Length: 138
Image 1 (cartoon, one colour):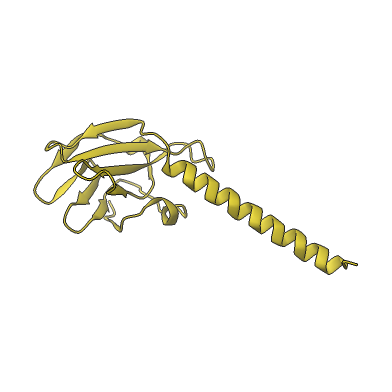
Image 2 (cartoon, rainbow, N blue to C red):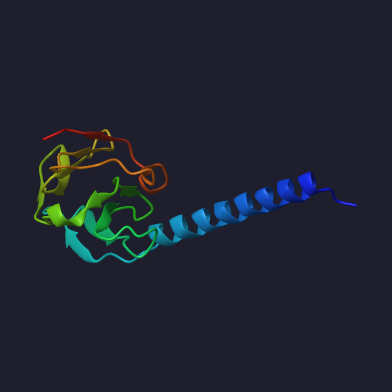
């Protein structure tokens, strides 16, 4: 016979497993969302995509930048989440960096630099961003 303490422990354990499964499902869904805006870098070597994730976890107005190497589409770099109110998709590129206004991607070191006004860290960046990033406060 199961005692009250064991029932409670079983219920908590099951709830945690279900919560974890929901988190995994939601993160996988966010990583697979289609781009809302797509731009080619000026050289054509990279595809720059803005991917909105507002449909999950009530993240209205949040997105991440997905940069895809045109020569090797398996090389996909994702930025941390940012507020789309500051979004400006004007693409630029030089010998070292490719990006949009406020977000740079260092091509050699594979690091994002975020200099967006009032940018805030999100706990979901651990799951979304697969690339190191640094933040330059404004």
